Length: 274
Image (cartoon, rainbow, N blue to C red):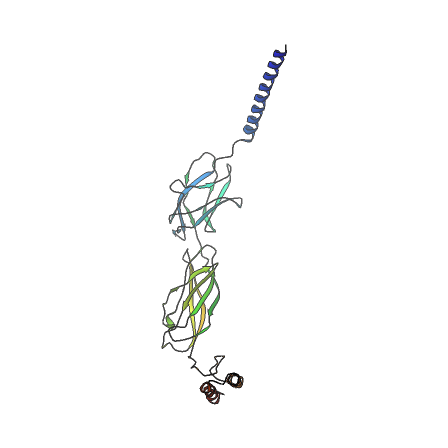
């Protein structure tokens, strides 16, 4: 009798497990599996030219990002089975951005359609923004040795291409490349060869983006100044010896009276330039 009771209990537990499993299957069936993402491949152009490798393509549904891809080969995306996958549902409209610029093409999400070819294109007419032109130091001597670092900040709605500065007026390249040194700052150094005329030079910057737009309206100002001859006691480098510098030299001699020649040199410089 006890054995029969145990058998019934075991069968009841088995039946309960089956019912629970079926219940779970019904829930899954009611919700349905997650739709398989749409997959896209094709050509990609900006202003009619192949988009360069590294360009990001992004896909949106109702303004929400649903997929993105960095292209590995200029002008193409999604090849070698590395498709642009987009999560969505039937009848959703998919829009695309190429390097942040809205693409001309849209497409309707389609369940079970498999990979689809979709050539994408975008038009970008926005030039880079160039700010903060700077030369440090702002003036140098034309000795072919003293350097000034030239900096600008360049931003673009898509991606910056090449930034150059025209140094031909001071004996350099007319398209000296400025390298990105971090963030949005582009930089290079320059000197002025011997014989460069003294004066103020406006060095034109040309910043382009990957779509071919450019901005050449910003100049970096650099001054070429005469070389100041060395003067005994000219501690501030202004090309003369004033009363304070003369007293400093006298005080130094009194504290350590070992170099009469230097003291006389400072006195002569003061007489000549004061």
